[in-house]
Image (cartoon, rainbow, N blue to C red):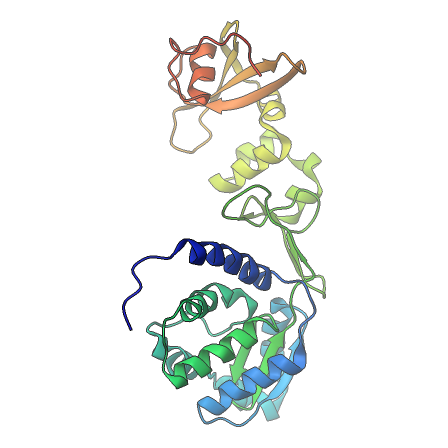
Length: 313
């Protein structure tokens, strides 16, 4: 068959729909379909000459890791089995025929991105040999029916899917984010707290009153420090941190703080007022701006000389 050089307009529309479908699969919060998942994984075992394993279901990846540790330590009948991971065998045998390798030995719905890629190629006419096609179907079945899983000789530990997944709104590339609780939570309570894609301690989200300028100054991790500031708002932070007023004009007030440790000698902000609501906002700007007008102009991507608004909104 001829090589596909570009997608047709119809295929581009299909690709968007395909992306939405598989993204939904990847972050599904439906309970695992255990019979389907076990059937797919058992078939994978058969592909590498292994008999069907004993399945141990857990409610989260964290519990899965704990189960592996406890079984290795306290269950003699499974100890030897758990020492013999089949991860490498499954990687090499079930994936190599598609031309690459995996770097981890657990899979599930979170692997939907690459499965979706190969299945879409198949959908638009790319032909795979019979064995590769069969194995791709098995990966697709696993991704659509369960969360993480760990394959060992004679035993396989499989995690359920999460019950809560929260994403930052209005982003082309979604990031885990929640201002009101865990961004990711499994059915046994194990959770991930995240702020705009960054994993943060629970208290940053659940107890923002604990975030003070002193706590921010004491935090050595730059990204976490930024998340803490964003959590309470730049306005509150610069007020509590005692920002120095640099200059004021009709557009607003230019403020300055010592370096936040992100490479700039100082941190500068502009406080502006929205005339339609009379609310004040604080925006971080380049550390080199010298006036509030220059700072506001920079936020619009123009020079201070060009920025002459008739009415701000």
